[in-house]
Image (tube, rainbow, N blue to C red):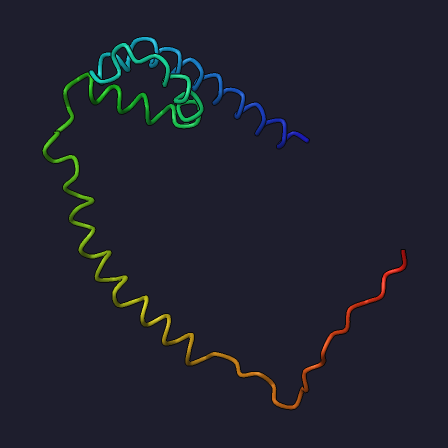
Length: 124
């Protein structure tokens, strides 16, 4: 049971760190990095589950935005560059997988005759 206890202890500490991060970020940080969130308090509790799980990413992103290290114009360049390659790969792989599936499709055994299933009688 030591492994299970260790895993539960890690989960507890992770959740505690996430809770501290959520309280700090939702009380102070979100107003500083997102001007659209200023004064909007109703949606903040909805962010708590995500912050509890992703708290290291929240802290890192908060630090990047606070220190001004975020290169806004370059933010979406890497994913957009990958879109072309992803589209070309899918354009080749999807028909290839489909044609391979059609080529290796099993045929119905001809020596088995279909049997009509009759409804069972229920007493009652």
